[in-house]
Length: 181
Image (tube, rainbow, N blue to C red):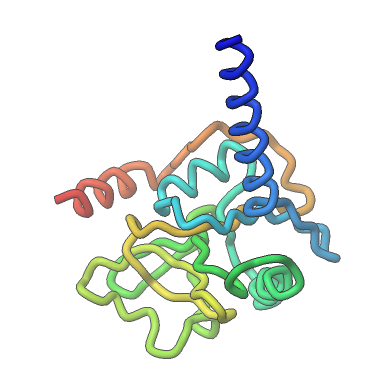
C-alpha cells in the first residue's frame, strides 16, 4: 500500500512538472523556417542557457537580421507568455560595451539596443538579453537568472558537440572566474 501511495505521488509530481515545462518551454517555427526554443523560466544564467541550447543541438539566439528580433517579439505577443517577451538570454557576449554573437563572432548591431545601451553598468555587464516587454537588447551580468532563446536555422543540421565553446572557451572560464570573485 505504501509503495502504491508513493508511486501515485511521484506520478502526480512528474505529470505536473512536465505540464509546466510544456507550457513554459516550447518550440516555435517561423515562416522563414527558423526553429526557436523559448524557455521563459527565470532560472538560467547565460552559461547554463548556452549549455541548454547546445544539448538540443541548437545555439543561443544570434540576430543576423532585425526581422529575427521581431520574430521573437511576435511569438511572445501571440503566445501565452507572462511578459511580452520575458527577459531572455541571447548569444551576445562582450566586454567594455563591445559585443559579438557567440556562435558567429559577428558584432551585435547597434540598432537593436535599447536606449542608453549597452552601458556596462558597474563594469560587469558582459552578456546580452532581450529586455522584457520590448523588442530591444540590453547588456547585463551573465550570472543573472532568466529565460533563454535557442535557435536552429535552416540548413544548420550538422551535429555539434555538447557545450563546445571553441575559440571562446578560455574567455568563458575567465568570465566565470571574474564573476565569482
